[in-house]
Amino acid sequence: MHPALDRPQLPDAVPEESAQRRCVWVEAWEGSRRLPMFKDHIHHLQKPVDWQLQGTSSWINLVSGRDGVAPKGWDGHAEP
Image 1: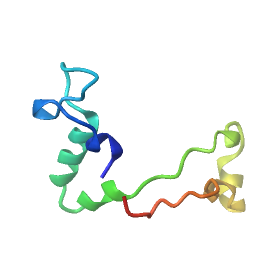
Image 2: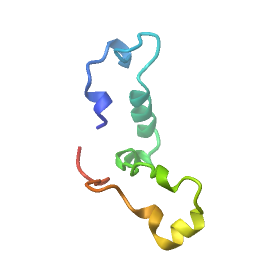
Image 3: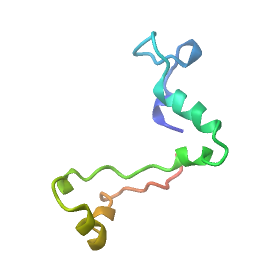
Image 4: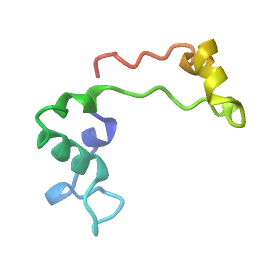
């Protein structure tokens, strides 16, 4: 589960920062439950964006494998 869902919540899944709107992570979680084919995709974490690649060729980065390199210590499949 996402860390934001572990924080104290007000009634109706309202985040503690704002009582006027619902927590975006609760909205995402509930929305994912309504998509049977994709409901488990919410557990897959994307690696952080490598901003050092900005302004470089995405095709060259793909072919060379440079765009697939994850930061040291990153494990997108670790259990929460």
